[in-house]
Length: 197
Image (cartoon, rainbow, N blue to C red; front, top):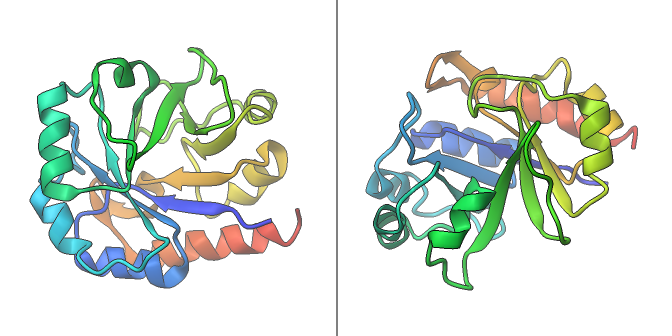
């Protein structure tokens, strides 16, 4: 079983290259208020020649439709990731994948689509209850987020058995500053964990 790895909060080309080189299948760019926020055109520039098959994810949080349309126009992502309830008021073309975010203690997904499951607040390194997440992961295709590191991701994958894993702060040398070595270390740990599935 191959586990999708999404590295989130990217802002620089060298870290995009490091993530792709290490085998990340998805790259997240934050357009919500955060130390990791990037302008949509800058995100487009640092992903101008991302290989086919690597998904460029627009990560938003309660965006208005106008804000989303600007990201869509300037960045042209493959995926929109935002809270599940947000999609009701957003005009998302069929060509864009939707990854609704479900938070621990909130609603649970229905259907068989891809979704992100994380702690109550994004980007704060909050680990979710993995056994509880494992029961939710039986529904649809879960990308597990929240407090994952190179040291604990093997245990998380073994317990939850998600489609993918998503992290940001654990591959940073300081808040908002990615570290290429930590990105490679994390993805290496995921690949090692896959062999035990």
